[in-house]
Length: 74
Image 1 (cartoon, rainbow, N blue to C red):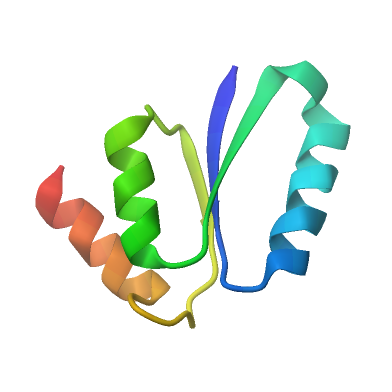
Image 2 (cartoon, one colour):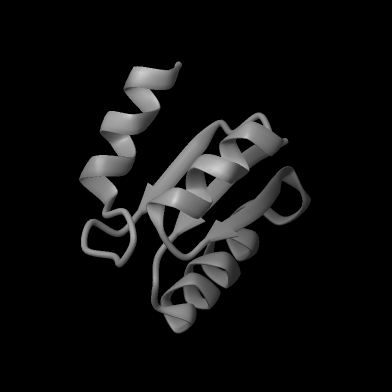
């Protein structure tokens, strides 16, 4: 099963990507969501994530800072 993290501050974008990926992979994917980079960091501590799909421009912590944070803490 592909553990996927969708990170975006636009709920409709997250919903669209969730439906799209679930439509393609069905039961072979589990979707986790976060609305900013800080929430994404929390999800990474909670779950073993295989794939991250992220927006770049978000409040609190943007996508680029999120990637830097992940690299520093892994």
